[in-house]
Image (cartoon, protein in one colour):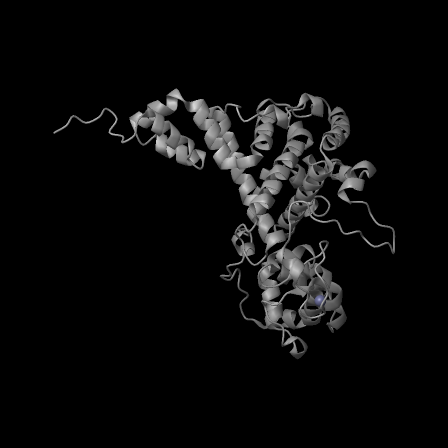
Length: 431
Ligand SMILES: [Zn+2]
């Protein structure tokens, strides 16, 4: 019997080193390293180059943006002017990654990845909740997301967490951060700036959605445009809110006008002229700007199944695949007037009862019930059809009273039914 090798591992140190550099992410690296004493020793000897390679494998070409964010956060560079921050060009391919940095990179990457899935569902192809972005679209999304993350980390609410001084001086510091934010944005080229603007709009939608479907005492004060606090709290806070984990803050602590002012920088003339965010004068048509992140999207290829309207980036098309998100455009409260017009008894009790019914019904379930109760006029509509916002509002408006009476007639109102929709999964409070 031959003597076993000291490692019991089939490869020598060089091959093992090579193998470690091909692993797709830090989790795989950790699992592999802990699997054998020999592998562990190889890793210890060459950890810097291995970490660098795995960081590249996991984060890809957005690594300079990811490293910049990570180093600015660990360096506590919040509120510094842009010239004092690390720059993307500082992170050449030879940059070494420490174990602590690797953990933070991996953690941040998981947030960006989760948001990319939502972005794909929302913007690329609502028929799927998994990522449908091409490699090029994915890279543009990730780079833009890391840049916006750095912007929010540098000048948003979390940058002020450890600020001392009286409230007035803190407020002054916040206002002065807006000038720094503007200079930060102006340090990017026009296309990069459009990408940051698109990520900002996307996260704003997500934050607004989260505050609408989780109407707690605090979040009710955060509704449009108050969701800016979640937005500027950064991608991690916005994602947490989307997943039903609202931050633990007090309404009086959130200085809403100030965070809204950060969003206002995107409307400053010198930035808005690039990102196309100016408000058109009455009667003036909005110029359509081609998306920077997406090359194309599914909704662009379809028309409303009913009125044949085209998809518009400012609104959307809806079907059973994305009814969850329609609450941003068609909140049940907007039908209260239609409801009252058709009710014989317009008592306060009736109104409260109506509000209670839609507030206690998860939104997707609400739309599904209304859809199933639609009148003969709408009988040829199918759940899978793509329908514009205006047509969906017509259906909801015409059916809202039928829905109310149907709900009232039910002996027992269910809490949450077993829908597979994302809203039920994300709505523990209503469950
Ligand atoms: Zn339509």
